[in-house]
Image (cartoon, rainbow, N blue to C red; front, top):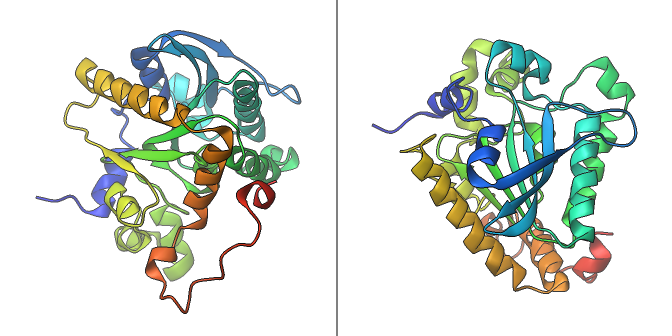
Length: 280
């Protein structure tokens, strides 16, 4: 029996799902965590650092919700503050400098919307990540492992390829938030979930992601090792592109969203500016 959209929302939010740290611990070797954004402080909702993948140095960034109640409170339930996104960008720019590929694990209901976060420039931090990642001169793979909520998720997902776990979700707003806005009734979340097309299957059909990762053995060692091999294989393929080809392909990937659903008359004229000019 196929799962409904709201069923997958519940699975994506389940406390039993592996967190970003679980993926780091099982897939990479010698992870060395780096802290701070060099502007305000360190955000425990975002962890990142340098590790080895098949003997090759990589930069890993993950949104971490925590496993226990105490950890979840300490990590703000995986809702990053602006310093978390700035830390992530600092590490990605460092990866670019040393020609390390970047792997991001995303699991957040959204960026933290508290007063302090707004005062410290939450919107600007997310916008800077979008701009900088679009032109990052190193391969980037983003994997949605649970919730992928709004700009809080997109801020780590401007990648060469985006993958989703089978029961992960990716949406501009939560079903409850959408139902509250459209119908003034959060109880219609299940209906909103269907309308939002937030499942991995929906995202793949819309070409928003490149791959769905089955969850049959989620959390088992064989699951992590299979994902590890997929990452090794894909990063080797991405490494074969020149920097110019890499950024041009990434630019085209995002510019093509929605184009498949337009008629020839509706499609905009081809950009006269090349990708290097268009994403400065």
